[in-house]
Image 1 (cartoon, rainbow, N blue to C red):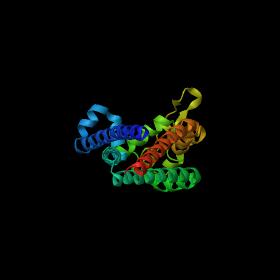
Image 2: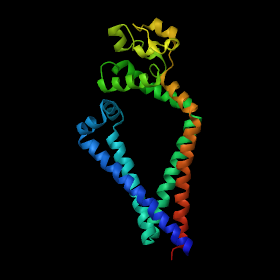
Image 3: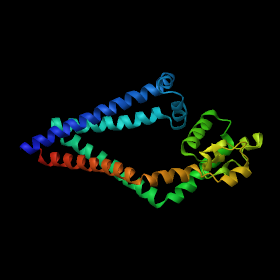
Image 4: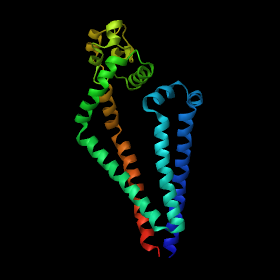
Length: 242
């Protein structure tokens, strides 16, 4: 009985923390969606490109709402010893866990397919919108500058693009000379980009993930372990309730 009381208390505290985090994310998401300019003033110009490209507000609202509901169900179920709430908590966590495992398997097994699918979507957008759609251009400039990469596949993504046809050059990030402290060689022509062979951003991103595979794996394992522990605890409480 003492063990049951301890587990119940820990379940309440753990889910109260999840509940508060969810409420905070939900509040920030609503704030970003309703009053975006104030958010941009506080977090600076980098947040502008990220906000427009990924729409951070809606993402935060979705994540916050999910954590809010999970925290409430876990906390209420343990406190009130409500079996229905605990079972709902368990099934939501189980669905999230299965989705994460499925996403990891797809990422590992179908990386090449994912690359081809993304290339079909991203490369035409680069050819059409880079240099003309401000938010899209800012995001790609930030990405290429941060990862020291060029385009999605490589410099050929800009071949035949509106940007190249009008300026007869491609972005300077495609002409980074890594032998001279990463300096830019300008004007950045197709011929110069071909000689320097700057890697595409997708391959560079995969390289960074693989380089930090231990850290990424540890974080993923930690999250999965917490989810499994929460499911086990919820089932323990469920089975030991009157």
